[in-house]
Image (cartoon, rainbow, N blue to C red; front, side):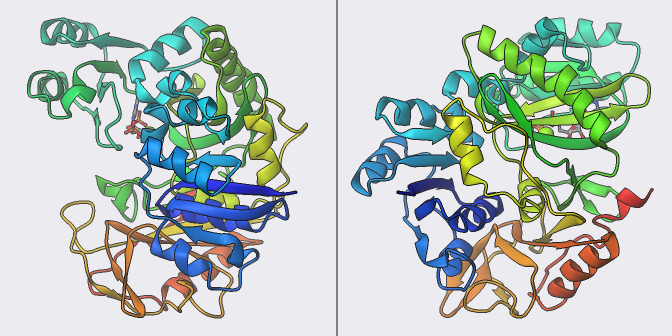
Amino acid sequence: MGHSILLVGSGGREHALAWKLAASPLCDRLVVAPGNPGIEALSRGDVAGARKISCVSVGAEAIEALVALAARERLDFVVCGPEIALVAGLQDAFAAAGVRFFGPSRAAAEIEGSKAFAKDLMKRAGVPTAAFGSFDDVAAADAFIAQQPGDVVVKADGLCAGKGVVVTSSHDEARAAVRHMLADRAFGLSGARVVIEERLIGREVSMMALCDGTRFAMLASAEDHKSVLDGDRGPNTGGMGAYSPSPLVDDALTAHIGRTIFAPTIAAMAAAGRTFRGLLYGGLILTPDRGPMVIEWNCRFGDPETQAVLVRMQDDLLPWLVGAADGQLPPGGPVWRSGLSLCVALAAEGYPGQVRAGDRIEGLADDGQVAATDAMVFHAGTRRAGDGFVTAGGRVLGVTGTGVSLVEARQNVYDTIGRIRWPGMHFRKDIGLRGQS
Ligand SMILES: Nc1ncnc2c1ncn2[C@@H]1O[C@H](COP(=O)(O)OP(=O)(O)O)[C@@H](O)[C@H]1O
Ligand SMILES: [Mg+2]
């Protein structure tokens, strides 16, 4: 008998997970809470396992309602996308109800939920990361900044949906950021404590690993594109695109990262009584002089990286998730398709500032996809309107495709994008090209 799965979340990441999980022969049913119109539409299309998928309007934060939903629908395995639900204790609630769950406990999710906790853990475990201090007091923070030889980065301790970090270029700017967080409480309680760290220089890569508490299996590397404009210019966003694998991360570097970064972190979590089972995502900077160093840990699949990574995954994802959840990860690592993949986010007018919603999206078929292309369209911010879709968020769609070469992958994705339009739609034209330099 296969699994009846509950997938929690509503973004492009969850659309990609739904598409991949439904294709598993070990999946009988996939209920997504709350899902999104793209996932809902997928169930009417012709992708593998489409008919297994349904969406139920229970939000990712409604812990009790999710547990009740799983009981009512007899769902036996839960996969959680968003960090906020994990940090709030969604795993613990399902564990109490006796339901298997892919994702860390509340105690283990602290590795993302508190940057100060993560930094202390890494320091104890000897994991390479920027020098830092943690402060809840403006005067002490100012004194620390004054001692730093170079520029610093100021981070709110808690979850801020990617908006709680200021990379500064002067100590004045750093002091202002500290005041903004600690005194003005710009991020509420998430900013009641700040981490101030040394500003590192180097290219960023995202490394995700499936962890069963003691062992881990690394997924293909990826690079995210945070800036809104081509050439990494303009303000930061939730991510305008990603590609996988990163040309900077070869097998030797992957092994090095596993040995010096993932292994000691996972061991330290277990030693602290916070055994990590789920997806551990390291945001790394490859420094020219000190090797790979950790910028931050996330306790869940990245978005948009997951979209790019999953379309290249040859293996069935489900046995990996079940194995991690049960503390029995399969041996070895997942098999990947050759070539590379690319995800390009299509954003609404105004993003990453105030966005306009309700623009009618042209080019999508009834299943939410672009007809006659093998690129996937993962929905992140859409709403159903009549028989079509309209924009309902900053990042609206993630168009994701593969190719044996970068030229082919880019052609696949950008040809598909060329058939989608709405007033104010914008996207980066240079996703993947950074890999060339
Ligand atoms: N120590 C650092 N040196 C240089 N850049 C940093 C440093 N820490 C963070 N950054 C930059 O800020 C971004 C966001 O920081 P991160 O710690 O990943 O927080 P979050 O993703 O929660 O916003 C990183 O992707 C990186 O570009
Ligand atoms: Mg980050």
